Amino acid sequence: MPAEIKTVTDIHEIGQAQWDKCAGSDNPFVSFAFLSAMEDSASTCAENGWQPFHLVLKNEDGLVIGIVPLYVKAHSYGEYVFDWAWAEAYERAGGQYYPKLQSAVPFSPVTGPRLLVANDHPDPSSVRRMLIEGLSILPEKLGMATLHVTFCSGDESKQMRDAGFLTRTGLQYHWHNRDYQTFDDFLGALNSRKRKNLRKERKQVLEAGYTFKALRGDDLKPEHWDRFYHFYRDTSDRKWGQAYLTRQFFELLHERLRDRTVLVAAFHDDEMVAGALNLIGSETLYGRNWGTMDRTPLLHFETCYYQAIDIAIEHGLKTVEAGAQGEHKIQRGYEPVITHSAHLIADPGLRRAVAQFLAQEKDHIAQDQEFIKSEHSPYRQDQG
Image (cartoon, helix red, strand yellow):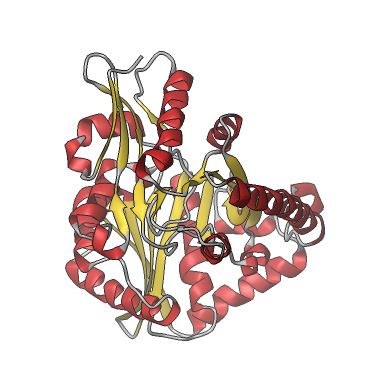
């Protein structure tokens, strides 16, 4: 049994060595480097509604054996698993939905582990059970109505469901590398109509005079980050009304994850006009942010989707996760994948209503996934 389970409001209280011993190296979004860059740049802080509140489990020797990246949220922005309707219904009935507890990668709809276990622990399942028990007591202890664990793994979702959490599914669109050696190999797996369309789209962008560079490590200069931050601010202001990530975040990201960061930069007449930020995992390329001041049609698809496929093939990566939503990705070779989250709701009335909604939603999502695969797949039948 652990000697201590507690929460901390500063990731540096845990330290990089113990954090990364639990987080591992497969997924950069749960690494100390990424999450500390969020905190040190004030991109996650109490002032903007993302107060770090990480759950830490120690053994009898005082060593960290488990961690849950956790935040106290004053709103539901930046999550991509939407619970606005739940909050509205609860507050209309006289309850107080916020603040709430959220285990997530801030502003990133990226699937990955949320119950982080030390890599040398002999019984990971027992540590995950203790982390779940720790999460379960927090809402009542803090006087909060809900706790949410979003974009967790399927196994984690099942273990939390067994512990009494409500579970939720969603759909994203991911590209899968079927041992392609070139982009043309990938095109060959598509049906004739989709193959012609992709070739046409790429050709139109190149003929319009755009060129692309996948910038990484020392090739990424401050001027590239300045320009990309300008794009990011413009996109955030137009779409969401608030840019959470500060300019310092990108500086720290480059400093701490330079070899796992790839900025796809689009140029026209030697001017950088668009960019897509990606992080490289052990098997996956993760699309992070996109921005541009150029409204040219098809530029987004090339910068975010086709260039990402090129990078994945070049590096032998199995998957490209290109962010949330986007049914337009299907005809460009991205396939529907189920995502998972888990939710702890204290109020019995709200829990019943949400449970009923989630059961119906799960059926619809499963049907949507099957329908897309059977009726809208861009792949040849022998490539399914």
